[in-house]
Length: 236
Image 1 (cartoon, rainbow, N blue to C red):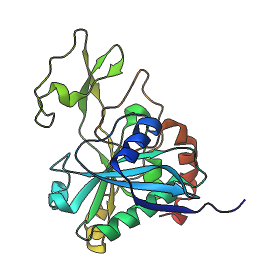
Image 2 (cartoon, rainbow, N blue to C red):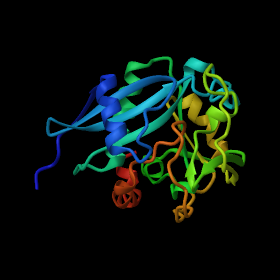
Image 3 (cartoon, helix red, strand yellow):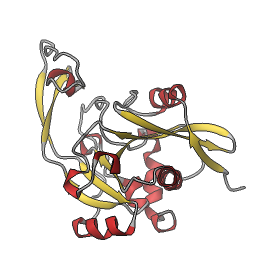
């Protein structure tokens, strides 16, 4: 079988929205200032890799980075494809670095509530820096509600009243992964490295994840993700 020809380039908002709503498990487009990188395999559009600035203004603060020096990987939304997800992510990161000379690190999160452990990050040699603090969310009939809408932190929009019957659910922290983009940054964050976590089963009734945070591919891609983890050294 011939090797797939993969390329990346800037994606339009419409293309990114189509990919997120059709191929990502959240069915949502992220918030914040987006950097949308389209992915083509053998000249066919197969999805997007999306990064964002500003959704979390303190994202780079623990590492001494300014807002413009650190961004978050928030979506890997792909249709059916032959190339490994880890290769697509590696190519997208190189493209991002080349086009953003002031950028020093990318951060991403994997949500254990959804059964995500960060296989694509492990396959591309990201640094695992433990978990975020425990948090909570609101659910209605087993489905996850967008927490920002009910906390007053919804990007200037008025706080909404929780629907009747909503319940508060305590959550474990998300897995945090770091990808330093220069040698000095790598030396700085390497002491934070911890052993990679293993995959866990999704929480029963987890429902739909809110729009912010996390970039694991759609659930249908997880078998490929497990394959990526076995040969990550060649794709890092």
